[in-house]
Length: 427
Image (cartoon, rainbow, N blue to C red; front, side):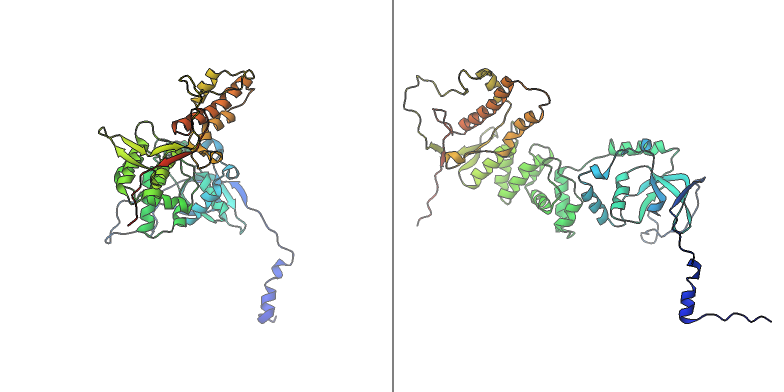
């Protein structure tokens, strides 16, 4: 009678379990094979929220958690964002970070069976699914090393219905909030729900007006704008003033509702003020160098003190003529004064005064039109046109200085002093 082998114990039992790996270990990659998958309907028990012990309504749909190893992007012809490449998206890192903060509340991806099975490294076989929309979510999950995605299976006759739905979502169905609505949402999140400026900034997009990147300071400005008087907010919502107007106004005079309303009316009436022009007005008002008045027609005017110029006007007789508006290099130029003057009209220049002539400056936004002209040079540009545009810009600078009282009769840019009556604080 054969003796039954005794069962190993202790360290011998542990080491004996590795005998099956004596011939080595083979790592098999995931394999994909064709398979037929049929979508059917069935019932399953799931936990859903109840209100007062009852389901809120008829269940409209259900999402599933599926491992990323079972997901692939659909063919490019069935994807709306078919050419999306995270490496070409400068904001992909910010997007992926925002996606990460959503936790399990990430967007659900529409998928359909690929009619293929994938054999996973552990030897199990699972259906493969194709993603038919929002490939950027898929890339974001991979970037953040997520192991699964939220998906749903739409009941459609073909993938074209998903493509059509995606086009509608990005086209006709998409409605972006106005900047004012974003401001109010930021204020609510910070003051009522207690979210930090950093948490709010993570979920925001680049500002469409000034292209400011999502940053806590941007959220701070938004909360300030949401505290402006309602009339000013209405003007921002109706685009009578810009976000940058409202931001600068809130930073300067928040709390003075009357002055905020007057400044907003000044910026939005007639031809809307440029941001640089409005910034200069706010600076003068803040420094008590001017004040605002409204006439009988409801038009707001900035009233400034008497301007004194350091550089005295020329004492030589001019025969009633003023300094020429257009300066040229005599006998050396192809561009004529009339052409230079015509080109000058394309520029809007804001000259920033200073207490020394060499410190008088040009606001950054004044170079916008000149920069656009330079960027538009794709072929040879004639010397005459180059002279006309460049000297036209300089001419626009001088015309702006003249309008601000910084150009004397000789055509020299001069320092301007604003003389304003002040109440004496002496006892």
